[in-house]
Length: 315
Image 1 (cartoon, rainbow, N blue to C red):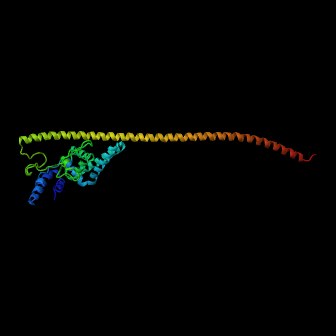
Image 2 (cartoon, one colour):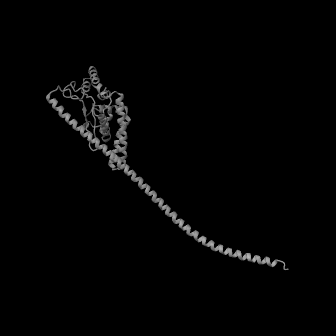
Image 3 (tube, rainbow, N blue to C red):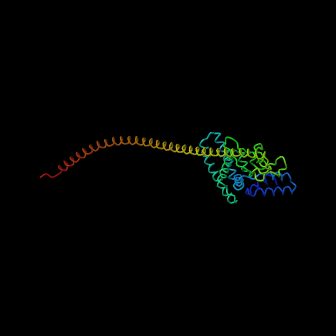
């Protein structure tokens, strides 16, 4: 079994079970004579709750997770083309896709007996958003070996250092990754069991390094949250713009329809006026014809009366 395969299996477990399972797998590898694999396994760090949930999605909702990469490609094409309408539509698609996956991650975590906090759910969404923005982040998410949350805004690539356990995901330049939990200068068996920095023996220099590392991590997370908030605001603004554009398009269509109706009515009115004039002329002609007919009928009646009178016997 390769390190990547073993890591994927280990990260399928709830974080609270990870350390014991990892150590057992490392001991098994050592007893099988694979000291290198044992050392690499022992150096693996426990995933954060949000990363573990994303790893769950990579296994249980693989198609939906893979679709984020395609969505990201369409985003990049629309951005390159400057197609604002497509970008607005894609922003709505992204919002729907992320909402569905976050809900799925929440349900999967509950089913696994490891409910996610609100903060962890925010990080899940942030990581999935990064998968849309950065193809390498998408590969990290699909690997099922993610150990921490990711962030990317589409302008800058995601920081993938120490983000994935084991080797870099297939198809992604290893330079983007520094394998999370890799062994240090020693054998690696004295590494951190839970990813919280407990393995350096409590030296003052190690404590100071952890303090600085913690401060940097806190600053990074704050920046990631700010970026996620800005991205959400951008999505909302793009959606609002798309709605306005759609309403403007409907209004223009309605205006064109009304103008068309007005043109048709004017044409019909002109035709009616012409027909009215023709009918007026016809009425005048018929009136003259009626007068002549009345006169002719009267004259004929008089002539008939005179003829009858002439035929009557005289006394």
